[in-house]
Structures are given as structure tokens and as C-alpha cells.
Length: 142
Image 1 (cartoon, rainbow, N blue to C red):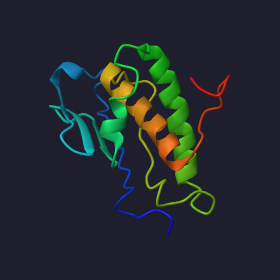
Image 2: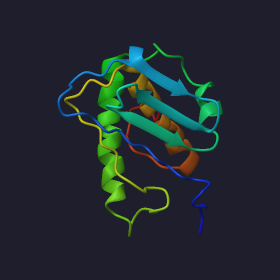
Image 3: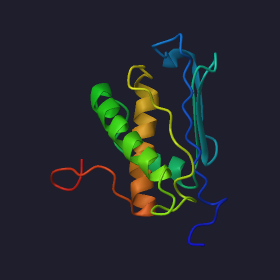
């Protein structure tokens, strides 16, 4: 097996409450003390859990928060999520040890800047680490 299951666990999960359409990061907690990155709202309306060795160190080398606009991040994340979820549904074509579970990212919900920033950067990290390409861009980088 090319990738060890425990070494490349990817657990991204965004669960949203159907009654709330806006998520506020003021009440969120972020734990970056290990290679597990957890972003959760106090009321647990959503949660992102990233378990990926090296992601936390990689993140500090990226453009800082505020570099990208929230709308840009939302658009890119929608594109990434659609492609990622399609790959999860094709285990015969894409490695099921890398594409383990779908991501529930609803476009009509405003998750806030922090969630979109971290999710966007996770997809970029994922592309580099696993040599995958999700979004074709002009000039090769964005």
C-alpha cells in the first residue's frame, strides 16, 4: 500500500445545523498544538477536524489570514469540495486511502473567514503532499 492508513488519515467533516445559516468564529475554538487541527463552534454547529502530519507546520509558511478575500476562499472551496467528493465516489479510480470520506460543505451557509481559510489551505496542502490537482488555474498557481 502506497500510503499508510494511519499516516495519511484525512478527516474533514463539516456538519451544519439546518436552522442556522451563519457561523460566527468569535465563539470558535482552534487547537493547533499537534498535527491535528480542530476548528469547532462552542455550540458544535460545525466542526472541521484535520489529522494530517505536517499540515500545521506547512500552514505557517503560507500567506497570512487576510491575504485572500472571504468570497475568493468560498468560491475555491466549493470547487475543491465538488472535485474531492467526486473522487471519494470513485474508489476504483482514486486511492480510497487518500479520499476516505466526503466533505459536507453547503454553499448557502456562511462558515466565516477562519473556516474557509483553513479549508482552502488544507486543499492546497493536500494537492502538494499527494501530488493531486483539483482546480486548473491560469499560470499554473493561484
